Length: 139
Image 1 (cartoon, rainbow, N blue to C red):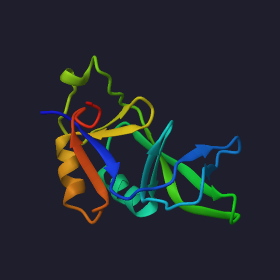
Image 2 (image 1 turned 135 degrees about the horizontal axis):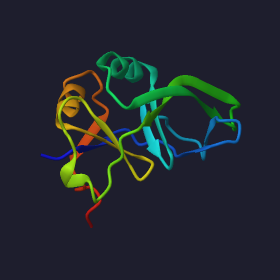
Image 3 (image 1 turned 90 degrees about the vertical axis):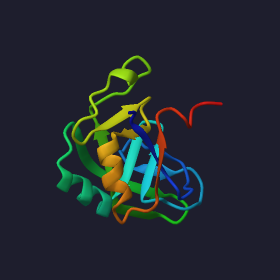
Image 4 (image 1 turned 180 degrees about the vertical axis):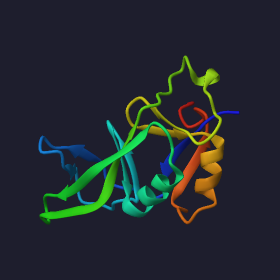
């Protein structure tokens, strides 16, 4: 059994973090309820609330603001997800997959264990897409 990569089914614009901590939209486009990129994972508040109720160990949330510089609009309905469990090629086959777990891979890829995947799949968050192991990384 392997962990699952979590992605958004909703195509969204990339972001980068400003010195003041906000995340600026690189160009005009859609925001997704789940966004993962270089050194960030942002989740909309309703998904944050769901995950907090699950009391998943080794994760924390911080405030996040998304800034659209073209329209001068701030979106404050997101949290930044911080994950303290790391996934590497070396530990992939030796992960403890019991309970509810999240893993961070290369700073911007979220993986979840099978039990958490099942809970998320059976929830109202139908915009999440799950792929087994590193299957999306194989060319």
